Image 1 (cartoon, helix red, strand yellow):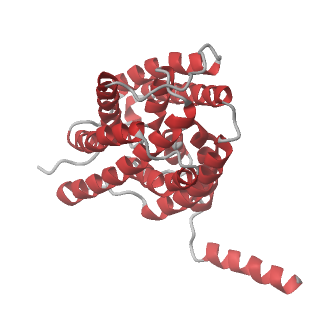
Image 2 (image 1 turned 180 degrees about the vertical axis):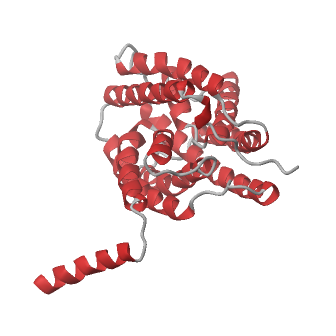
Image 3 (image 1 turned 90 degrees about the horizontal axis):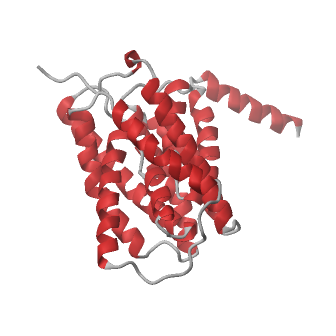
Length: 292
């Protein structure tokens, strides 16, 4: 027994002696916790992982953006797998969100690389939308929606336009968009149980398209646009486990608790955007050096 413990300890020591950065296991633990908390509300946690990557894991910008998308690709399937087993994944809302966010994330990635080195004014706008919605949901000031028929054609068009806009924002900031879509949809009267699978599915697919787009831009522009693949893999493993556990936990939580959870997350995300916008300009790095 003692020899087994010694061998196991020596194996861990050898891994670190071989040069495993401490950021990898720490990132996996952070990703697990964020996904566990965020998945029941229909959010991947990527927007909250972004500051951890920058300040704790020291991922350079703009590689942090596609690394965040890589986290979504690896982590979100855990929750989707659980929702699939519960037969809650495929519906009209999911199709509308995917149809809007896919073209949006391509446009956002191009805008990020070609035009933007920062987005402080827009971050304040996003915070101004999320904060009141988050407070409203967190304080329980809304009625629990009743079961209703499929949305009308006009409502479907509005949902598609919303998802297109959010997909563009997600491509710019390296998030799948669930943190923006979920509060708006729930405030519009959708149930948290139908919103969470739809927003996570849109997050997953748009993150794949976002990574591909960034890789194409990397090939044409040069610079550090590609994700940190090794760290992204560790983030993905932790996020996958947390996402699956979070999705399983959702079915055991009442609607009101889910809404308050989402409201709290929306307030935290809004505070994060305000903090980022208030950061001195020297912390904002350009996306890439444009070839002259």
